[in-house]
Image (tube, rainbow, N blue to C red):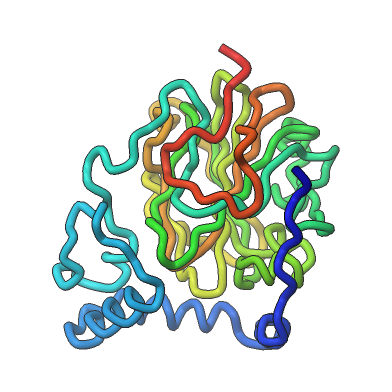
Length: 293
């Protein structure tokens, strides 16, 4: 089936995206960071009530279902799920998060699809790391968008061993459907955390992409990832620090809506035929078939 035409950006989308080129993105994100972590009872309850209603956030799968029990909005937003709420498809590549497919497919040489008719460079996404980029050339990618209503923890799509992590400073544009059409190289421009793993499929990257109101990105092995802005910061894990994760294990989280990108080498797997732009996902559901033992 041909890919459906994406909705054309509205005038509001064009104006708001244009404003983001001018506004102090990191200052706005810092303000949101403090606001979402406020423990003032009246403020946090107003935030929880209003935003839950606005985005119709479903607490039915949450380990703690009473929104008033959380110490801050961010604690509610990054809530844990009840055990068994997201079964992990055994032996398959699984979705790293609740959300929907933004784009999925094959990397054409060094080019990934950002939106229909819009591509960006693998090398730029990986912060200029030529060795890492070569490993994924002509490989596979999947981009998963998390809206504010989704469960906001990120999980590993296939069993792997942590090799390194890179914090890449950058812009903080929104990452919704409109901005993927309006901002060239969006995912290679925005701030992001690149997590590199080794697996039986070969190298695997899981990239957590920041956005305008994503005040911070956390990983389970590092906590909140903060570094000097300017040049990328890299952490290499050896010996006892090379943690192993089973498929579906939690690896990180971020505040508000954002995006996760999976990279795999050529010939390592095939994506499910049912996947396409807009496909809804639940963390742990099968999204691909591994081709290596």
